[in-house]
Length: 339
Image 1 (tube, rainbow, N blue to C red):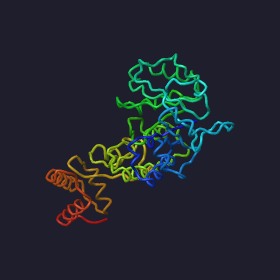
Image 2: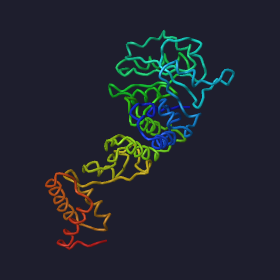
Image 3: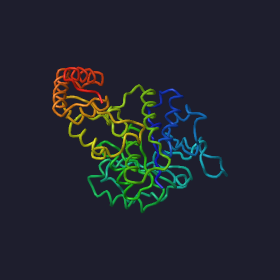
Image 4: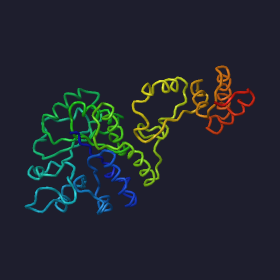
């Protein structure tokens, strides 16, 4: 079973947010499809009783901090108020690395620095982060080697070359079972929403994933940080289902899968056909039908010319209200009837 850990709440940029905003983001990450939420110590303290211990990974600054959060001696080996503790690798004591619930994070800055002789088997659980350039090399061979080393491995590809989500996808395709993401790709990692959608499209969806929660998560992130998410952001951008180009509109109206790998309804959204200088007759006809108007082919073409001219003059697309005025005036002059 594929396990996703999202590390958004371990990033310093979230630490100044209000506790109530962080709790909402935490819940939505888990609702959207992340199996675990990784949190930094400052955010861990702010979340308080909002923590779900069995779905939380606590990031510690160093190995010295482990003692304050590990379970008491004689316990079941789990950690206090979190499923796992994650610490950066310092090549410390082997016995300590074997503790149940302790994840050792190993950073590899490039594929050429990958050392198959690293003592991974000495860890109970470990994370490999980095390998930004792995797609430039024989990555299937590296993945095969990593999977052979042990089963308790999670991969956290970094994004300095814009390949993190692609690497995450290839890792899962190669049979990897644990992956680390960050919502929106924040911090320079693979994007949670993109990984979830890749799994859905490839026929391996997360059973408990709620795609509508991704849109709520985006809104909560914007409200908490004051940062506006790019309207063209894949999967959750506000304008990714806005279509203007004539050939695109024609193809989508005939079969949405021509241009859309997933339907907007999956995220609780709707498609928007926009009118502008790149529009074609299909888009104008569609907009007329929405208003119960029927134009002949020649009249539709003439109205399209007006729409393009108006869009050119305005330097932007035509709004719904502006099109209604144009179509209404054209209908009155041309004696066109309402259906």
